[in-house]
Image (cartoon, rainbow, N blue to C red; front, side, top):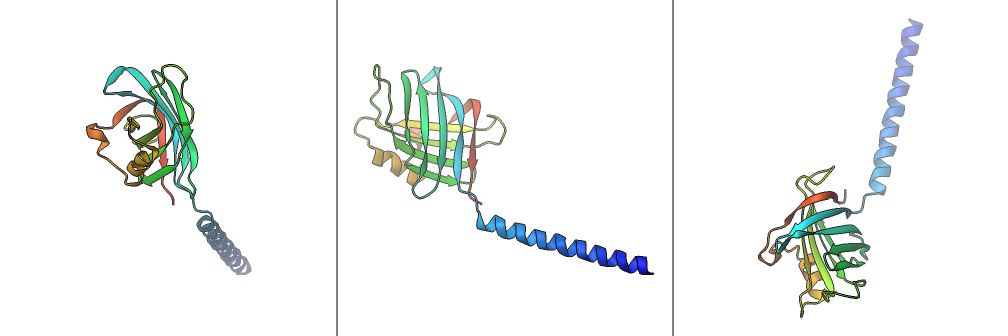
Length: 174
């Protein structure tokens, strides 16, 4: 009988400690909630030039202020800059920013970019989609940021392009 009573007390103590650990863990998780972000490096082919791949590297957090940068490799060279707008909803992300580094020769004169990405699942590219737009003459960073802020899906009459290599991951805030 003493062994049975001791076993019950030990089991009760283990259950109490387990519950206390669960409460502490839940409290810590709530105090350090994740920040929404989009990350990855991926390649796609644009509809207007299907023989020339484009590669995008993105790392951006939807904080205030926004943190992150992009790098867009096109046939004419590499364009990069800080991300100044990020919106994330579920598996979709929109981002925009000014082009601060561009190729010196053959530059297309882009001043800003806007991107949309869809995370079709990890790992890999299956189901990932992307749409990228460089500001046309007369369009500004403010125009690209407005597309991002409004979470535009009109894409200038185009559909998002399938990612053919790499991976993009959208992490919504928890």
